[in-house]
Image (cartoon, rainbow, N blue to C red; front, top):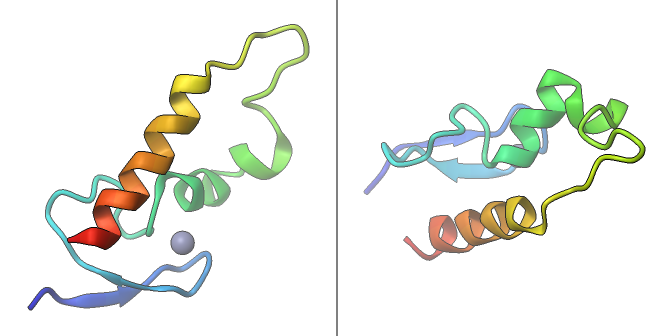
Length: 68
Ligand SMILES: [Zn+2]
């Protein structure tokens, strides 16, 4: 059974898995929040096209993460 920790951003209990590249956060979203990029909207510069692939990637990671 994997060790558990609590995501410092959303306080969700998360299994400590080697394949989680976002440790100590539960997901890329929380990591970005910690970096201040998400909240400040720096990723979404007006006029810059946002790739939908990036969102899909984040979603897919969460899915596989919780499944395992
Ligand atoms: Zn989190």
